[in-house]
Image 1 (cartoon, rainbow, N blue to C red):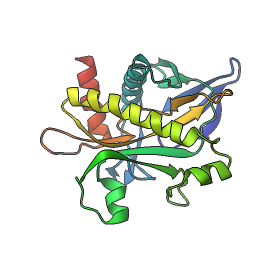
Image 2: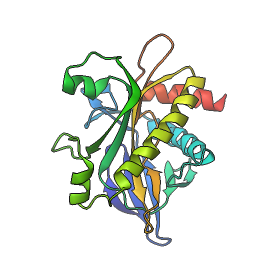
Image 3: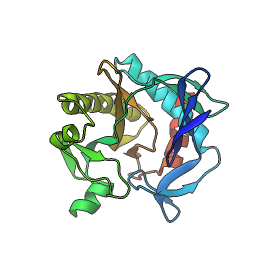
Length: 229
């Protein structure tokens, strides 16, 4: 397969024989100085088996989104090879963020105490740029940069809210409270939008019944145990 893009936790690959795009889930996790945190833009370390667990969790949640009428890029998974088959889409370098509570980078950026409730949930869009520190970006700038067409910014935020409703409800069944999460979206040649990338603890933050916030690795293991019953 041809590597199209090598990211922090996944590699985007193209099967040149079938022209099908795949995501390879790696064992790396974001964080800093050996600590794992989905809010960081650097790789904090690697844990053997993490990629496979992430793929299994992502498969579960993508299928859940589809069952709830939310279109995703997911087309199937080869669990033995850590590969997810996905639709070929245009995926702008944007992250759509929804927050139910203050935490992580928001608390750091705006000097806010963690745990303040947002009602209604707070949404924001950031530019995926490590060099620029993932700055907030407006609809007008997204259109100026040719990243989105008019109307797609609000449409993507609508998808974000729908994902949050499904994700929050499902995690609550697992005794986990969703604090915040981020998704990527992509669109096809007709402009139809899909949830892209992944849906794993790498893109969310949760609190357990003891008030603790498990890191991505521990949370993925908890989720997988719940999924497997």
